[in-house]
Amino acid sequence: MFLALFHNDKERNREIFKIAGDLCRSVYGISEIVTKEFGETAVLLGREPGLNPVWASNARGWFLVQGLPFDVRSDNPIVEPGELLTRFQENFIDLNQLEGAFSLVAWDDKEKKALVLGDQAGTLLTFYGHFRGCSYVSSASLLAAKALGLGVSPAGAREFFGRGCITAPNTLFSGMRCLDVGLSAELHDDTFTTRRHWDIIRDFARMSFGDAVEGLVELAVDRTRRFSKLRSPVLYDLTSGYDSRFNICTALAAGIPFGVTVNGPDTSIEVRIAKKVADLLGVKMHHFDPATVWTKTIDGSTRRELLYRTGGGLRFTEAYHHLLTRPSLATTYAIHVSGGVGTDILRYHAWSHELLGVGRRRQANVTNLLRYRVFQEGPPPSGLFRSDWFGALSAYFRQRADEIHSMRPDSLNTQMLEAFHTWKMTGHFSQYCTALSGWLQSAPVTSSAGIIAYAATVPWRYKLTAGLIRSGMASMSTEAAAVET
Image (tube, rainbow, N blue to C red; front, side, top):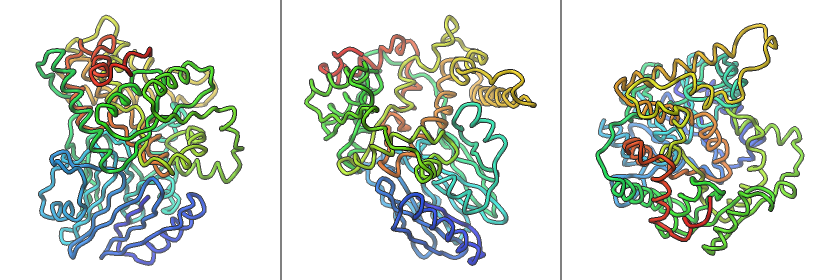
């Protein structure tokens, strides 16, 4: 994890780092903590098993990256931090050349500016803000909030209580934001300015169904191999559904070493089908039965660690069973792959609630969107609260839907809804990946920008009945695809 401060009061920086360092040791169990000072900036680095921030510097500035970025324009996907720092300082860096799951900060001392960048889908969330004269960037929201003395954001609290997770750019803390989908931020003169470098609504490409499948397979295999060249072996979630099966088929086609894992009782259909696939392919299966594994009491110490890892962006209990399994899995595997944004929009999941209105060049049915995709549990009981905070939360999500539609008012409702879904996933899914990566790095292959962008260009009719993803599975592994889902 990291916390970068852009502030010329060195004494205050040390006080902040003292609090952050103590939390790293007492809460996260991090023993290797490094601090760097460079001009008016200072950085704290905490090295965990799954997340190891990499630092590079030259006479003019520094560069910090955490996670798994890879270069999509080169045969060699490995990123050289020193080279990227020089290119940033020379204003010659293509922000879409990097994909993966990462957070990145670069500082140019000559220009007195910083670049803040995450992967395009926000898989690993990057937090930033300005508080009491100090600008900061961090990979850990609660740790930064505690060290800086931030208060609670009413908007963030409202979203947390309404949905159990918080979407970008909101956080639970006042004076803190996180990077939104497709945005980077530049810090100059103590002001963060965001700009869009990656579009979430794209034009359809003319292609046959066969070409669409072929293009998908080629891209998925390429991104899988790039991740694997960064770290290996890879652990895949395997359940009974399409998303995990597509990932397994891609791993088989890519020829990488991998194992699989599933949670649930032996009687669960998820477990039965997952084991059937693993046995058929001869792949190592790690099965965790809640009755025998999820037995650790959540005492004060456990709750505290889970709270800090989820950072107020996700219910702390969401990370509980991973606390009991990921550290042991990390002794064998270097990356964990689960379903991602791409597999959702490679099928009809994001817009099936449009029913007979699918594929129209008009605004989506936002009322249905909120009911079926955002607030499935409905509002709190009438009269429970003195003010209608849920109405304000609903209005916020409606506003976000309108903002996404306004990016391309001439788009089809399916395109707008896929873009909305991509953004919405910065809530539960990105919060989940960010919370768990310290134990074992999350690298959802189908959340790579290239796969999401490709999925957005495929004609929507090819996604009906999950035809595109099923055909992609069959073309990569007929054996794995033949097992029931």
